[in-house]
Image (cartoon, rainbow, N blue to C red; front, side, top):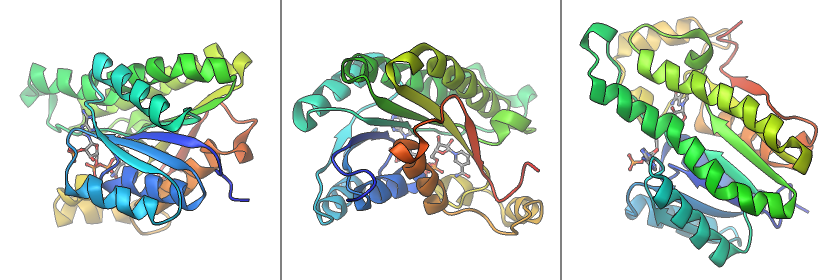
Length: 248
Ligand code: NAP
């Protein structure tokens, strides 16, 4: 039997990058996967096909994770279609980097809405279903900079630090109903988000990593499988770094 067989996972922001790798890894471990993105495009369609090719159910939805109403509607549709929600991965996230002196109020607000409020929205939407089931695993995608901070990323770092506080609080609120909540703090992972950085900045990051390489989306997906499955049944309220030792 596969590790996630019979489970339904909801993943936000999954058409590409880390979210896509999580969706594929979950499917390969037997989970049915519902995923969202701002748009339903050809990437979402190809992901659906890849997932279905593994013999499990996969469906993409266009849903803005930063909207509570859209998130509630999304989760309702998933439960109607899939019958349950066992794992939620709050993965959707964006950057609007700038030094504080140049950062606009709009860029501060947008980052808080997409990176932090989205976790509130989706967790609120799944909680009644998980409470009825008396089980569930919620995984929030934080970042190493949510712990360490980073010049030029005060909005992003604050949103990712906020996710850690949220994770620890939800773990305490829902633990008595066997609902676990953990965060992952990826370091430098090679996706479109980090490909935007200059060669010099990327080299600067990898030089600081003890394992001397950027991480892959699959490195993060493997930890999601652990946190989503019964392998981590006594793990809650924790932040697991996936950063090649960057934070040591
Ligand atoms: P990515 O390649 O830019 O993918 C982000 C995904 O989120 C995209 O599919 C994007 O959709 C989606 N998204 C954006 N806003 C959304 C919204 N409002 N509602 C629903 N979906 C939305 O980023 P990534 O590198 O895979 O990052 C995934 C997560 O890991 C993020 O939370 C990021 O902060 C975190 N993280 C990444 C790194 C890294 O080094 N890459 C390090 C630490 C943490 P569109 O395609 O429509 O834009």
